View 1 (cartoon, helix red, strand yellow):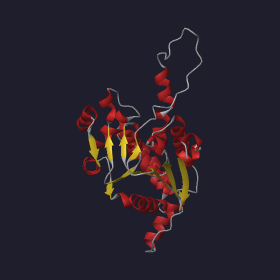
View 2 (view 1 turned 60 degrees about the vertical axis):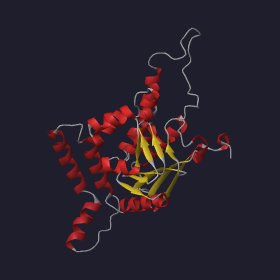
View 3 (view 1 turned 180 degrees about the horizontal axis):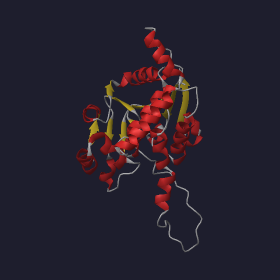
View 4 (view 1 turned 60 degrees about the horizontal axis):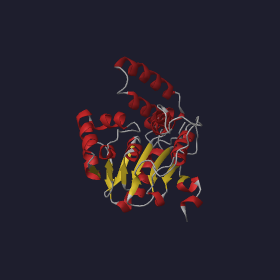
Length: 277
């Protein structure tokens, strides 16, 4: 089917299976590169998971075995503001606004999603596509997949919050190496340096992601939410701030059903039955 005949819902598929939300990039015609519409759909899907009860974990993946996501689809025309006849083709500040309204709303949607999010990286994740995976809480890679901080190959500056996330995962010096040289990072190397949690054969990627997500989906969802929030803030705030926020998080969590169930199951020496609230 020609790409222009496929709906947006077909290009970014969404389904909930056993309380796991699966978001799948499915644009083989363009190597899973993202149009602005696809990017915004992924953002809206993640935002839409917050405060809901039908999903308690999420997986972000893509179709095929070659490409997870190479970044933005540069063949797509971007809409521009109406302008006078003598205005330049692109005025200063327009590209900045496009980024702030676009990729800089997508990446926080993943980081701030209240559910734990797994990236199941089936193939090459380059540029913004690499950062799309690294924003997820856990990363599982096919043994044939790789990450590429591709920007320097094209004399570009890293975007999509790459300069924020990469040093937090591998350290400042290693982040500079990866971004300056823009070399391929095979799955096993990605695991060794902290960009990936687990590497599996390509045929096992979906089942492994489903197993991990399934474990999370029956876990204490609110405790995961508070834990994710504190960990994501831990490198950005001072010790006293995190102490204050930790104290509030612990207190709020004690009022959840699952916290009470966790204590009761321990006392009664049985497996807990968490409900997600």
